[in-house]
Length: 206
Image 1 (cartoon, rainbow, N blue to C red):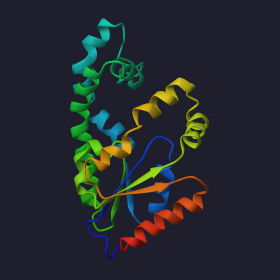
Image 2: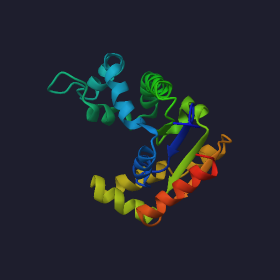
Image 3: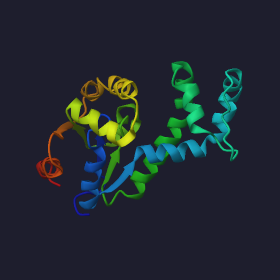
Image 4: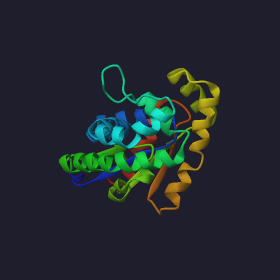
C-alpha cells in the first residue's frame, strides 16, 4: 500500500472496549492486523516443554496436574497455578514473552509493505511498542464494558470487576512512556467508532 511501507500502528485499550471492532475496520482498510492474544497461544505452544519443566514440580506440590488428557499443557490448570502467585507469573512471562515478541516482530517484518496494526491489550509491556508510529487506544464507559463482558464471557461479576480493576491505569502507562497516542471513545454505534478511526488515519495522512 502506497505511503504505508514500514507503518506500524498499535491498537490497545481495556477489556471489552471495542478493540476487535477497530481491528476489523483496519483490515477493511487493507492493513495486516495481528492479534497478540492469538500470537500468545502460539508462543505458549512453542515453549510448552520449557513451561512444563519450570512449573510441574510446584504444580504437583499443590495437587495440580499441568498435563491434560491429550498429554499437552492444560492452560486452565496453568492459570490456576500462576495467577494467584505474582512470583510464578513473572517467571512464566519471562519464558513466554520473548517468544511472543519474536513472533510479533516477524509478522511486522513480513507485512511491512502493507502496513501493520498490532492488536495487543498489554502493548505497553512489549518492546514492539517502540516500533509503533502511534497507538490507538479504544475506550468505552465502564457500564457498557461491563455488560459486554457479561454477555460475551458469562463470567461472575467479581471476576469481571477484578479484571477491570487490573486495567484501571492502562492509559496512564502509555502517557508515562511518552507515546503518541489517540484515545478513541467507543460510546455509541459501530459507525461512530469507525468514523473516529477514519478521522485518525486521515489526520496522519493515511
